Image (tube, rainbow, N blue to C red; front, side, top):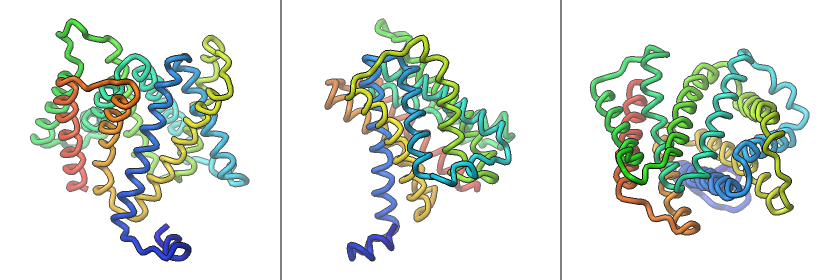
Length: 295
């Protein structure tokens, strides 16, 4: 991509600056996708939104891959690819359900507990060693999630369980991805995930389907388009910058969620959400950095 800019626009730009721009754009697309899902969630059942998200992504990927689509369906571990697709599907269902019933920033902030949960699962499943500092950081992250949930409050919302479950499923998804990274291409993983999500969510929409109008159909298609663009830009960013530099950018989604929530829904994050999000973000960044030092 830097060569493209130099050739056609006579622009010289450092890899760090370009990578930063790509990452910010990536998480902007993801935040708009979540915003679109929240808007559609006011009208449609989450299962229909999930189905639309995966179906549109399948269509887009088949167009992009064209004649190579069949070759990308060859996996060294097809059963694990399907399991990975199921985990992301369930994650998406819980995530979209949370978006339908919770303030935007609150839902996203709790979902960011994922790296902390992944550390716990890696200890038990992958037998990865965990230091005393990591234990402390895990506890801090969990405290942050509890501060946001505020279970003793009179206004406690049981829908808070949705982003928790989404984070748990995504942690298992991350573990499965680690097994597949060394054997399958990104194209194979993307296509398996999209097709698995489409097929498995199809039976559920029979019970919840409502015909969308033209504008709503466009929004549903945009879910898959935004997801595809986000993943593409993320892959491009990792080609020119280190993963350690890219990792903390995921927490931009919390800030973007707060921005969209305030701008569109007049949602002002409560003090417990701000404090809890801060603890989760700090815990996630430190855990990420500690893992990268070990590797």
